[in-house]
Image 1 (cartoon, rainbow, N blue to C red):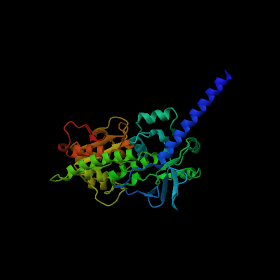
Image 2 (cartoon, helix red, strand yellow):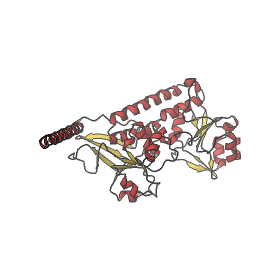
Image 3 (cartoon, rainbow, N blue to C red):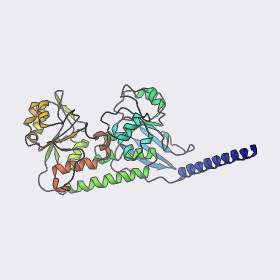
Image 4 (tube, one colour):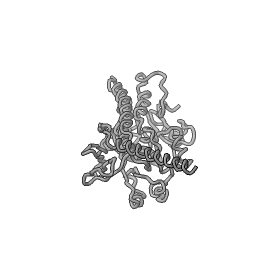
Length: 370
């Protein structure tokens, strides 16, 4: 009996060793396999190049990463080594999270800041059962939770510095995600390639972005052929005594232009500014359309818009019932639109130039307020 038991144990050990060797062989083979070609067409915040078998990722002017698949890879001076594919990360913004959703890579996400205005059922379930932790908001990060998540890297938005000093002290690699700075909607969507390189889904990222690009540019080409005057559009609303107006080079302003409309602000500003009602009224009084995005707790209406600021009824778009509206309490706006600029564009085209889309088109985010 002991003899047979010994033979049985030896067989198990041999099988385990064989499986381990097979896994190691697949790993080695994966490291040696060629990577999908990666080019950058629209984004201005990152660039990619290959050097001696190492993929070099430059983000902005000061952050440089060498994406390596083996420990002995030679890394150029000035580059921080990042082993890919990463196994775990923490996302600081919904924009970043949208990239993982588009690539079906939620398994890699181990932490997020919070779940406000989050609709994705898979992410919510992962938070509920503890596979994803909520680390708190900027300036109030829970360092213990961050460390417990064991992230290989943390994606950050450099314009939000609160709490990053404490995170930096942990020694975890911080990788800036600058998608929010892109002025071209396709440039923002192209950041899915950065996440694709990090999680080992480069081919999938190229395919996802290729579809976005094709659909977006097909619609854009239709509006470029339009004759006659283009409708005008304003954006935003009064909050706490001021009206935040995005600049003329803003991502949203570009969407309006690509949808065949003219935004009422033509300056070169990107971030915009807070204006008094009188100044914004001078710009927006005769705009054909008025775009509003908010988190109204109930069903938004023209009555609610007037109640928030009685002078709103003076605008032409209010009088003619041409307010374009999206409620973030009802739509997954920030968590998915960064990788769906083509859908946003089609919503706007359907409003500005309905003859260019199918008659039964159902908008996903924006529709005319009833």
